[in-house]
Length: 302
Image (cartoon, rainbow, N blue to C red; front, side, top):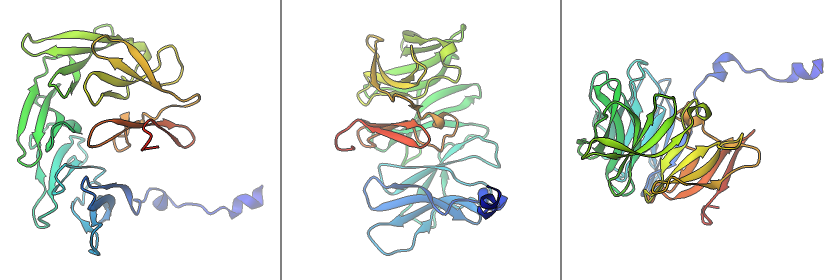
């Protein structure tokens, strides 16, 4: 045993913590480009490579202080967006890169000092738009905004009255708020903007969800919510909550593993829900074992 152990090569600390050569690759919505993270001046930045030509890959972000870890394609292949803070303050802003103009500077689409942008989400039913949460009005309250990616215009959809910790907007415009009650439970309610009050849909025992509920995403038609549930179980499985009735229906589970909810702690990791980027339909589910296990829920995806 001792002789075998001596033959195992050791990694240096520098090698262990070094940046990967390439990571987090994705194809543009029109299928003409691939983006990925790779080092530039000792920091991870976004690189873009054309799939229709022999051009060399091009670094499209230029951050030498902090690595870029999260980026998003837009519906228009001209625009690529990425999230970045300043000097490690963890106040993330959304920046836009013009891929058609290599000399153009990146634009901060959330240019509010001291503000934090969370929950960036492209909207299949609203091409060219995205939802995000911003707390520039009040640092303790996140309001829901719609962002026009091309113009940078921000339109407020819901102003936080003080209770909601998160918002969701259905394709028909209905708003749903997630809040923490005085008893420590998690409540989902439909928000009546005209009356300025919440209409409860479902409540979850906070003792079962000390780190909140993950995932917690609207279905593509806005009639339900996919959520990670451990009700009457010691494993986190996927259920569908009907927003009209509050009834839960199991969608998928694994006999041994929990849903892979690491994205709740590490935002650079993907959601346990694999969804069609164009329609929002659920394609598959990720589970966390010794290796990631994927259950396909769509025959074509399978």
